[in-house]
Length: 200
Image 1 (cartoon, rainbow, N blue to C red):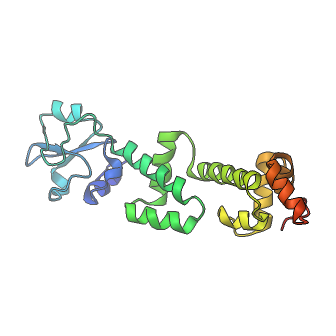
Image 2: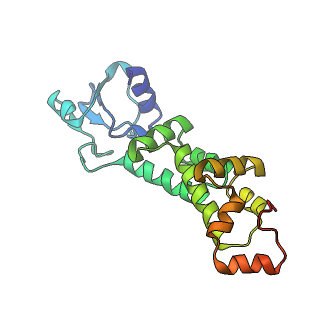
């Protein structure tokens, strides 16, 4: 991480960098987290450190406002958990996810980095897992039309849903429903005269 990137994070009070580095102000003798709400110092008075211990060893004292001395402070983990909760609740629509991320003050690039560092999986991979799980549930537990299921879990069309489902399960949605749908749903489809191989 370059000093220019760190200075940008300090200037913007970016909490997503808390725990990654600390900055110290020579004129005050204090070291802070990037998210500290104190007045931004002059760039020439700022030094950067990877850890709080390094800042202390250099003669700086912890900031009482941002509590840069609290070792248990884990903002990155908290951000990752917030992103995960957002994805769990909003995986059906990309627009909703992007809008919520803007409210959190995170760029898409930064969010992806934090999430992968914490959970070892990319955001797109996690969304795919959520959508696949929900598709399986709806196919096996409901009589919803397959085209409605595709739209319900965030796909813009039936063909893209079919490709996604076949790649990840080895079965078409219709075949999966025939194989794993509960007895009640199978009987209901027969009574209603549904073609169990139909996309609709």
